[in-house]
Length: 300
Image: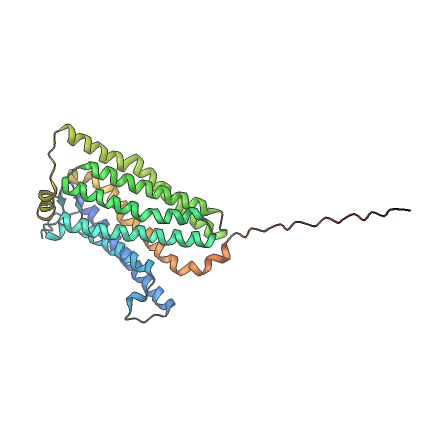
């Protein structure tokens, strides 16, 4: 591999260095969380599957994002930083698919548990919807990378937006079912989700829609299924030109940092789950007061 481009004067090198530092930090945080969960659970050190499922799901997301940070690529454009088969779209998209499904399953587990604690149907119903929506989104993503049509990315990211809008609704529904620090945590999560939805609506989805329109106006030819599958596995272009990466830097930087932190926080839910009942808002039921029956004394 050629590392001659890693200079302080190359913006792409600075950006990639940020991704590496963020990924290393995220892995260290996950390892610390994993160690703490193992100590508190009292499980055997050799039995990894006795660890809380939220932590294992987070591992898939944290390490998947770290892999994609080390070998970043833009799927439809077929560009990457390193000339390696590991930089192929097929490998990268496969890793991303597993990681993203694990991430949304984390959300489903947490929402279902919070809905159960509060006896609220809204979070529980939304928990059933989010994973199927993201599976459909992943199919749209594969359509985009195989055919090189940005329309697939438009639908994919629209589904992600809709999914997190639903998650936001569930969090708002839960907000006043808890008090004190738990209410603050839910409010912070709802705020973060709202910022994500705004970013997707204002930046991400319009960007892909504009790219799709430009390609259609230019008469771009799309790949078929088999030719596209062959291309995603064998074709990649190494570039360190900031002009080629400019449209990817913003979302990748946020995705490989803040989104991973969200996964780590969801994994940490396993450490505080047993404390949540004490923060529930108790609804006092007013018992009807029996009215005294007037005693009527009739004189004779």
